[in-house]
Length: 256
Length: 255
Image (cartoon, rainbow over all chains, first blue to last red; front, side, top):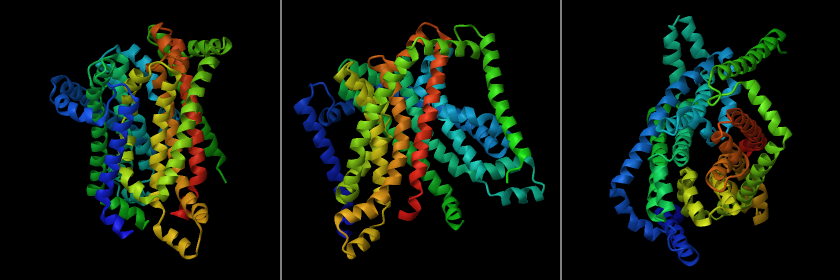
């Protein structure tokens, strides 16, 4: 057991080489020559990263994802906190929030293209739609979990309305909220890519579609790696924020 | 005991929620251009028409078959593979980071590759749904395996438990609840995979219904289909939640 944990990085490296090697061999033996394989991707990597088309596409997509996420975080937090703290709001909205959360978001694309046209506005709407519901649901869970004593003390001290909401409820639901954002990032990326496939507008999704149609699979796969890198990077960032700034959450939870 | 007063108030607010939403939909639909939105009444009429002509049943059947095929194959492969990795610790350490990476990757981005390699065959669509479902199950099963405390296995060993007993008493109860979380996630993702595959590979089922009604500006038909998909999503999500809750009760024992 001990020896294994000491050699962990080596084992992981070996695992990576095993995966890449198996991929390379399978593609070389069984697939047509244009299919992406590690050696080809490695060759295409510097070229694709340096190409203006790819950089522009990445910029456009990530911009839409971040913009949509910001809209969803602000609106989802407000609606979610209201649902968590006000019974009437919860009962009025629960049905719709839960229902639309369970709906596969791809299904809304034809409707959004009718409403927003075949434009980048439809992509933004898809991203917002994809990320709003997990954030609102988690914010509501967080607001429900605020310890009742905090609110009682606040009331006893005649705290102002804004202090109760943004000084107590919001900070103590942050861990839940961040978990919701974590879910939302993945869904937002899927939303942006799917919208670009559907509407054929410039972006990483369309870049992938175009390159693979013209059998440049290696270049297209570099774009997939960028998307995966963005997903993992955002995940790591949120995890870091949770550990660095919300350290009280774990201790409070384990003390309770 | 429940206070009858609060119960009736609760049901009244739910009724307001449903009726208010319906009224809003009806009103907005009537005000808007017919190509942009349809009132609830027209949507429900169109839905009834789609049910009567069998249009809905055929599409829904096709989509469900696709879902069951992709999801089923994913379960039958991801669960055994995950369980294998849960005992083979070296292999798990070697592969888990890469499985995490692939699980975080937006799977839709692979659809163009699948399209250009496999074309418009039915198998290509099953492959898409499979890929959407496989990694959440695998990832969560491995996470469950990591959560099994090594001491439990050591204790079982020192009592001379055989391999089979270790599986039955330690590994399966430890990993299964996590695997069920993966199954719930896979259900949600699989549904996205079904619609995405039907949009971007050969059009069929619910996806095709959505596309054609969108293209023909049959907004009532489009809204009716979206409504059906939402109900399907809610139902499948409910099944997933029920499965997960049924088995998470174990977690306290094993963790």
